[in-house]
Length: 406
Image (cartoon, rainbow, N blue to C red; front, side, top):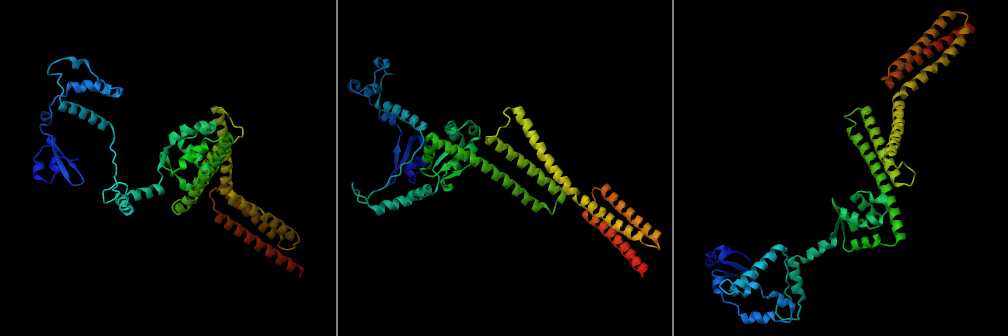
């Protein structure tokens, strides 16, 4: 259906838009002139015909042509012509068309001989292929024609499950239900606001959800199990993502800051996982909001205390390990004092050297204790220097003992 000005013929293009219309048939376009249509069809309806229809046995026909009070009046206003009747019917038809949507019906020519009861397969198949019908069927076969919003599924099936599962968000609720029913991953896909099913899978899903109580109990257990596993996988994925992120930024950020970010993220993910597990398992936990806040605060304090203690021990481990190694040199000094006591010559000089070594050890320990930022390399350097001095002094004492015996 087109306007006359879109026609290729000059005679049609002379008509205005309100004077005609084009109707394109299979053979070509036909122009219909509506100019003076009402005047040409101004014939009055026969009153006898109207009375005959009103006396019909069908209540529907009587209702369509029922006599009104205005019809009993006489005059020009009561005159009903064929054109006026058609105009009123056309107005009613246009109102109905405006309220409805547009649907296209694709017709297939069964045979080229224009006879009934004959079907030419090649001709029909060619028309279906050219019309794109086969492509649409293939798309539906590989697609997901059945779809349902998360909110609708949650409202429909929440009553079949216990209260602790009804409190889940619509999206998490649908994911848990669909995954726990054992459907193949190829039978459904999750979108942003709805879930899509392959042909026939939604009815299978509905049948499972409305099954007997024993089967429903197994579904509830499967949902709880899937929720625990899903949240555990998310926590693991979060930790692995943080580790990967740290590896990438390690060359730009100091190792100390990276470790702080790592353990902070581990604390947060661990707390989140513990809270979610406690809400799903049957272990007793606080029922009121106030007690739950106190309980979660205690869990956070315990986790923070453990992590902070680990961080402090890791930070100061080189210091107390270095102090332990340096203090172990006092045993060597006792051995040196035993050897010095056996000397007859230069005994005072040897004792002064031992005392100097003891003071050096004390000074090294004091330096390590006072400097929190001392590095492992500096501690190892102090220890190696003291060890070398102790070994040198011990070697000189042993040489003096050998000379004394000779």
